[in-house]
Length: 299
Ligand SMILES: [Mg+2]
Image (cartoon, rainbow, N blue to C red; front, side):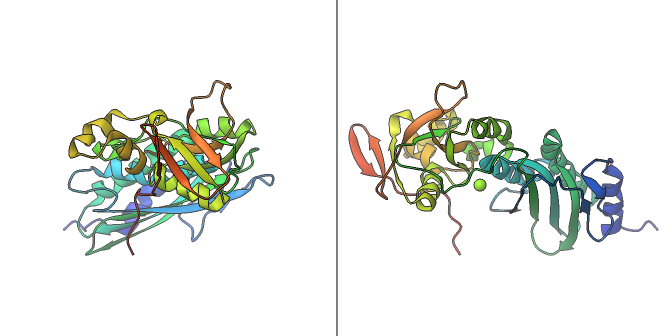
């Protein structure tokens, strides 16, 4: 009688995927991984999770796409801080009985996202239970010669930019976005970026994060916000394309402040940082209050 595959079969399989690298002194398979961290680098660390029914739907999305998404969310946070992803550790709470192939596909999705950046998966934990699928990734980033960009450096008079069209990501892009790490590093290297964040919660809410942490306000020109075709498709529900672009979230483009025009970098100016603490939107010649209406988890 064949035994059901278990956690240790999965760990053996993952260990067999590991290739030697300069960063990893002791790979996963021991109690902790041991990394050769470059002395001159700051270590940036963060964690992100995805829950079945909230961030993806396991009835619709294949495991490989789910694995890619959770890794890409973490990589997008690296972009937000202008650091290089170096290593990640991950956990999976697997619904009992999903099977080894499903677990492998989750892992391969993580690798699909991480490998292009040379980011190594150096450890993890797998458990099975009666609940739904939960995946987490903890990311370790390196400053690698560029000072991290925070949310708190915006100053009155700075321009506000985004790096691509926004809105309607729920139609599919929330599973397939590409983290803007290379562009973030190029932008930060100019020395002219004062604050940056990745657009996960939506422009209105993420700009609110920058304004609050920088103790400034903002005025945004609705006509200058780049609208994704998906936002126009979704606007059939009665909400305007601009509102979708400002509030839907999970675009994972960058939102930044500073003065970076004329440098040949693909940024779109959407507004300006102001000294008072208000956020305003200029729409059809009228000024309205810009309410943070993007995604918020209710607790
Ligand atoms: Mg973020």
